[in-house]
Length: 392
Image (cartoon, rainbow, N blue to C red; front, side):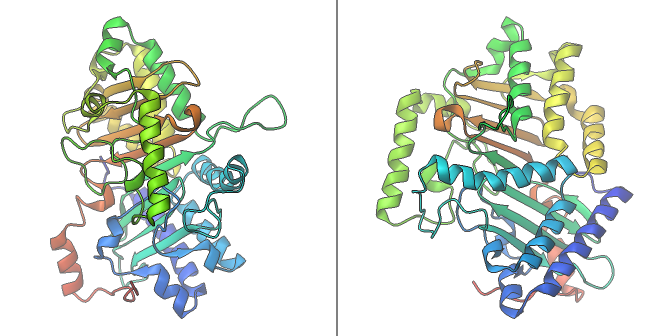
């Protein structure tokens, strides 16, 4: 559903390029080699949301000035609310370390670390003329992926935000809930359904323990939930791998998740659930508000463009799927899907206080619809600049 026209997309891409060049100019040779990748490298379409190596240059290997320049680049890809949410998610690493008794490692010096967020730049944002390049920022519970072709932003997905804890106390009456809208509006929508609609939307009484689509580069009919040991850059040494596998089995057993449930929840290109085409005006407005929580992560002009496109072409064609309880504090899951839009949400872990959310473009993640292998070949054949070869 990503549009490829509009001056706003060129303006945002220009801001991104300016910020990326400022960051690159601040890096020494070793830092630049870590941060830079060729545009056509397979790494550009790898992404993660676990506390694993996301690829690129981490904040931990930067100066404070470089932190500021990295955050400046991140802010160009997000709205004000989107950037504040991302900053809050990063800050939750300190809270999560406290929740877990400062004990988790994941083969890192500090298992929950607000400095282990990585920036990666693919291609050269400063190429002569309109540049074709991309960039990624990611760490635990954040993955931002952007692709620019001929100076125009063509893709903003996958875009992942998570929060653990999803709700934590603050001084005063209101809890700290960075992703409250994604939870509350999803529940409001399912509760607004009549009996027939709810029966159609409730695919499984038991939710999956994570996003069904996980961090796959591409999605295919029949994809089922991967499980905790399989969503990292690689497998861990035996004791940690066994811990993750035991945690996965324990979560499935505790919720009563069976193979039949997982098959029912499997991703299919034909959307499952109840059709928004049959929604009342009030239900449609709740659905629009829910989608806005995801789309409004983008700079305002791009979010408005995306919502206009949904309103004009796709809203009635979307389907809404729910799994699990509709009561607050109990495990639940939903997804909104259309021909090329996918929004997926899960809140099951840590006694339903650990949220994962993602917005994907089924036809255009990573600029796939525009930046094809042939386009890349042509890009290099005509002498466009390459990023420094990354030292794998």
